[in-house]
Image (cartoon, rainbow over the protein chains, first blue to last red):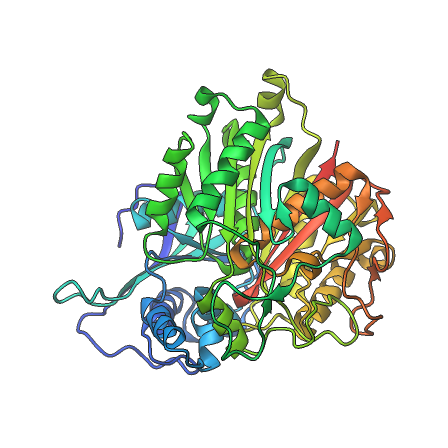
Length: 177
Length: 363
């Protein structure tokens, strides 16, 4: 578990990618070329499954928010689009939605019935600290009782042995825990 | 639900393809004069559609953002000391380095620093506005929200590939015969301030933010729920926070992008959230004149809503050809209408089923 610094948040569930022992990212139907959306999905599924169980996707959770924190976004898809456009070539229609980080969040919210606020931020400081601060704000606001916080970054090709990493936490206010 | 304290809008600055400053935005919104034209900023020869709403001689996004932030601070009459205590919330397209750019933008304007960068697609700016109100509730005297998107080749190509762009040269929200959206430039900044802090420096805001709501559809990666479920709950939350009944609403600046599914889902959401009042609340989408500004759309549309309330006239729903049975709303067609109530909603929706509602009140 993460030793989070907030005394106002309770961690209901937590999951990190890559797993130990390492395994391949599960394929996410409808998403091609890039690992970003499968990475986000794998972390979220591990976290939600750990708390709700595998059958829980049938329930409606209108007051669970999803907060995605990423500095790089989907850098692989973005690079693919940039190269294709620079070459004057047409893009595959899948990239229209794939490249928006919100789309994999929509896939998750549909599967798990998460109907709270959907928020995406790019960290200004420490990503986990920024994410926890935003989660606190969302809970304090009152449109959500739980926040699924997902931090995700793809491997940096400039860094030796860099790997895709994600960390998902299901959070609630202390009073509600 | 968070207690709502008075939050005033005490400074703003804006640009879009309609021009620089408030006056051209308001004039075009009231007359229904759209700014779409051939894209000359980059090559569109291989695209199905070649139109967007782009501002001539626009600078870089970072320079234009710095410009509106400076203008909004001046419009609000902030001193250097007040700026130094004001955090920046920024909404832009997500990319590596966005956080560092926000820090530089805040430093350039002498602000307290970058509090957050919002990259949640088309609800980014409106989400930032809601968070700004919360920070003021926590005790901040003022928060500056800035947002920017300038039409560029990659997003244009993606929307073209997704066949989301209008094929008949116009954006026609809620209209029969609508064929899609067109992209548009927007760079805007808004200063939100506690009314106590504003009063302490002799300012009385003409408009205040009184409510907000955020909710998700839990339906699909890129399509809205047909019943508009998430947007309906966002609207209900905004009204509930403010203690305002649907009958008291005088205007809705809709998200309506001019696409078949989204506009029908939004109409369903409004009927769910507002009940019979949806028959008589005037609605328009100003995207029909300035286009869809993606991450910045929520702030541009909030600014136009504020300007319209202050002017006493409601924007036309440009491009309207006639009613669509899937959008049974009181669409403002033809000419602007007089403001009959001080309360107005500005709505936004995004991929992933994200929805926001901002409720403002003319004082």
